[in-house]
Image (tube, rainbow, N blue to C red):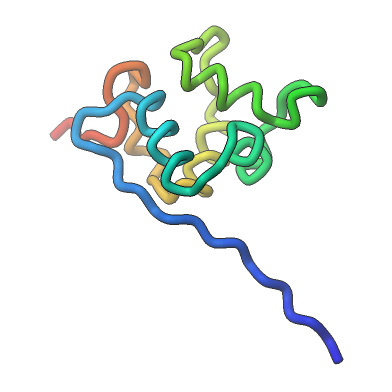
Length: 101
C-alpha cells in the first residue's frame, strides 16, 4: 500500500495596506509558528549552511537589505507566503503589497 504525500499547509496572511516586508514576515512567521530557519527552508532560500536558510529571512526582518533581495529570492518567498511578487513595491523597506494606482 502506497502512503500518500502529505502537503504542508500554511495560514495565508494578507499584507496590510502600508506594511514593510520586515513587519509582514514577522506576522507571517508568528501566524504559522515558524522560525526564520523554517520559513527559509520552506522558501528554499539559500544562505549559509550553518544558518539552514535562515540568513535571508532573519536579515530582512531586521531591515538589513544590503545586498537587497534578488528577484529569485522574492519569487521564492512570494510563492510560500501567497503574495504576488509584482505587488512588492520598489522600496521594500517602506511598503509591501500596496497598489500604486
